[in-house]
Length: 626
View (cartoon, rainbow, N blue to C red):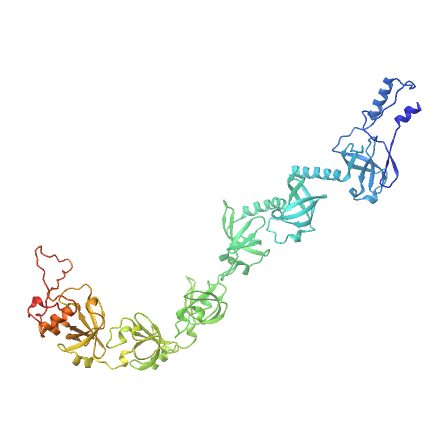
């Protein structure tokens, strides 16, 4: 009997972390039955009675399954662990670090632990207080997710993409986009703050939780949004907070609904960027200018709350008044000056100087510069204001008329050449134009560069002064003696001269005559036949014997002829001249039909003649005279 009781009460002794032996009611090895009573000849119990006793003992012990939370009682402490009895045949050990309130623990305290394993490789049950706490919190979080209830947590730290939150001891992720309904500019400001959250996503496998604070705010703002939209109408004045600033305008939070102030509606004055007028998170009053109910778009205005500066402008400004303002814009044609918020005037480049040719306003003013100007015109209806800078000084043209009277002679410097003439500077800021026709008495000038170049000093005569157009007409040839009185005698019709070919033109050749005067020789008076390329037969620089056939003093025109020169000369000389220029003397000049004229079918070739040939004296043999 004593041996049976000893066998029933067999205990296993283990060594604790403190080196002391600890009794445990757990067998070292797993047995088919939790208790085995030894039966034999000396046993007072039958085999059936022994089986009934074993079954009775097994039923007295609690049944446990791994993976559940169980209640236990603290029965002792070791150096590193807490011994917990959960009603199993052996107690379990839980690391002390899993108890945050370790100093408050005492024997007999009831605690909840997680049964990780009924028996490990050493036959011990495996318990965890930390896992029990986690599962209990996880169940609450899952329940909050399913019920969409609100949980409170504390922001721990900033991480990439958002913030980490302590949610009842479990770390949850708060994305940056879910922190607030407004864009968050400083996430660090939220660290340490206790806030309400809603669980928006759970990953059971990875045991990850995603929360949102924005979802709670949106729910609160939805009611405000409905209330605002229900009373929204044009002209309504509302208070809002600047939510975002862009290049084209400002978004304002009206309390759950956003509106846009376009950059043109921020101020009556010029605005380069909205940040010049408002700042982020600034509270402002705005006026509703438009509302699209379908698209939920609200247009707002800030300047509508301010008086329109053009409304009574005629009471403040009049034509001829001197004003002061700031240069706010430069263009190729002038400078815009803001004389007060919302009122800008244009100083055209033509109104910047009396005498200088201003090509760009930056020559006179710069951005941001404060300048004075005179009001030239005021158009209230079209909101246009014309200003003048040069009107601040006396008009020098009043004095120029006296200083540069017509027919007066002066010297100037060639400043610019154009196809039509030469600009000459008479003094600083005062230029005059010599037209190409007034450069020379004798030369047929194609471009002024043939006679002058930039920087040359040139003598001129004032031909005309136009005060209104600010123009002075000059002449260079007028400063010289007119040689055409002398030419009238020198180049009278019928006189014979020599002329050097200067250039060929479409109808003939320009020749230089004595006295450096140009004359004209028609092609028909150079050859009795049509030539495709006169310059090949009569090269530039060749000197020709000519006879004057026309002299126009008023038109400054001298026309000459080779054919007329040889008319009263020996025919052999004329043939010799033509042969020397590779021209067939017997070839006749064809008459070119006039536009629209039809030749008879059997019409013979006719040669236009003006005078009898110098050799034969027959009209048909004469060169064409045009």
